[in-house]
Amino acid sequence: MTQWVADPEGGRDRGPRALARAWAEVLVRPKRFFRNGIAPADQAPGLLFGVLVALVAAGGRLATGDLPTFDSVAVTPTFVPASGLLQAVLVLLVVGLFLAPATFHFSAAIETIGLALVAPDRGGVSETVQVIAYATAPCLLTAIPSPPLRVVCCLYGTALLVLGTSVRHRTSLPRAALAAALPAALVFGYGYGGFAAAGL
View 1 (cartoon, rainbow, N blue to C red):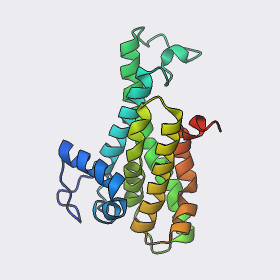
View 2: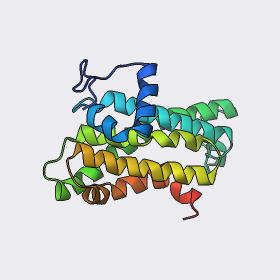
View 3: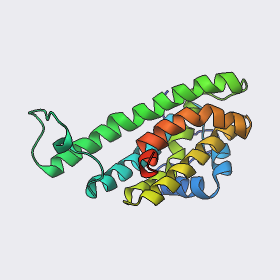
View 4: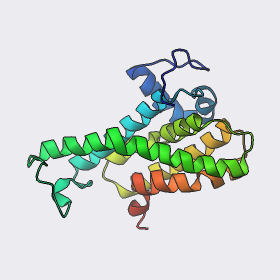
């Protein structure tokens, strides 16, 4: 499921430039990107993209004191280092290695169940994982400590998720919105703090 396909369908470059180009294209030409930039069974580039967005967002929130570290946890394990820098590194490791990938896969599983009900001609689960990961592109800017900006980023991410679901799974926008509603709430409402920023 997480294999790296050498020549994915639609042809995508690898490396930092390709990641930057994917970020810009998702934001500016999302329909074209979701049609051509996602390859079945080639999750690794999308997961890497989504994890990097999550790391930048978490890093910005850590730097501004907007993301809890181990100091704010009621029971701090004795093995946790006292240094703020080491705590931040541990938080980023948890986000990058466990939290972000698990959230993308869990959300994709939920969306797949919804798609089974509304889109019988749907694509595969790996495509759903990639759509969710690439839809987080605007959330790179949630690193900036601005609640209105965070709300806009999360709303735009939700719109990208609905559009990407519609394109990749060949279904209408209303059906895509229905299938993507709960994953969007998990990823953008809770994960990127859209609900908290909106005061919900």
